[in-house]
Length: 189
Image 1 (cartoon, rainbow, N blue to C red):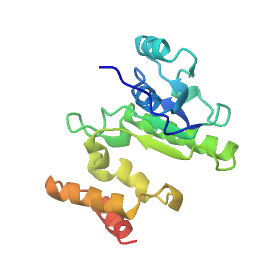
Image 2: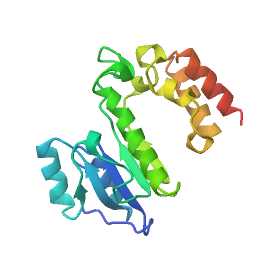
Image 3: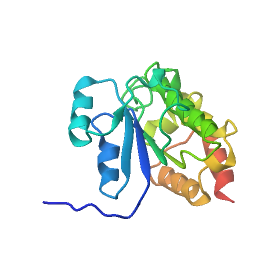
Image 4: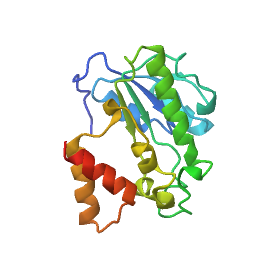
């Protein structure tokens, strides 16, 4: 089946952290979004991305990237390691050495925003496992970060919060108390 690129997003650029084989850039390219750079350390995965996107800049190890010194992009995507977050793992949350790399993506985003006076990136998209919201009893997981005073422009919309609450209820999942309270409060506004 041949797919055709849709020109729905002229001039929109993307950077991909924890790029793997370029899933985010590949999907974005179908909508006219230009992949500019990627960060990945697995050589074989990088070779796949280079085949599909020969002009994309490869930045290597995420811990060595300065977000203020790389080309600014409209969208930063990342699927940070999930071993410490997954319900199949030990559930150490961000205390897990691999899953703590999440904070490197956040650092890069903040550095880019600082270097561009808040212009870039406009959006950040994080893909991960459902357990990311509840690992380690919510103490060192995304829920703890969400409640830690993120600026309003980084918060979830009321509809998104309502959706997360409905999904948890539908699946009979018990969210960590701190996350439940933050989502309930944000869902009202």
